[in-house]
Image (cartoon, rainbow, N blue to C red):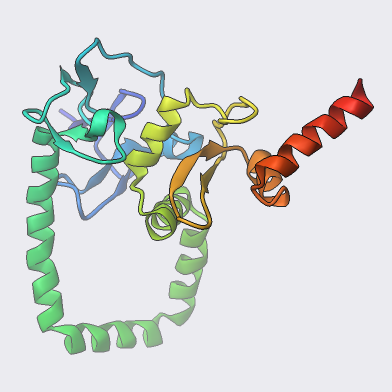
Length: 228
């Protein structure tokens, strides 16, 4: 019988193969928790509402009490808790420990690996270049670039950004338009503090208004005056 894996976003059970899931060295089974189709569509799924005093784990979908017994603390996360429950976090950590052992081996054999990679590149230069071009335009590469951008620019994880999106019900915090396709993380340029998620137009607009409340009010009065 074919081994199945449940996508953590659309909840579909699909064959656990590279045809349906991208490979990931950090997970215990070697595949991402999100299926390829969800990567392409922005991995949005219908929001599940937890009962008062409870929180739904974004990985296993279990509804658990929103306490430190089941969730680790997180300053940015909803209710001050991480989006993954402790059980899911523990499984991920064990996988991480395995990857740490591999990193130690790689660190001890840097020159050997470097020379091996150099010889392979010399022998397969065109093939490597074609693979690089193909990968750079793939959904997985876009996801990884986006994830790296959130961490580097705002110190946010993908789950934390998803929590913000859920809090805003998938809509821009200013105009209310749907953010299903794309969105910007708005932040204060003076303090670096993350505010909310905006559509590209609204994010550019407050930038053009120099993030000045008085200018924004003056602009609103101007439009009211000339648009009746």
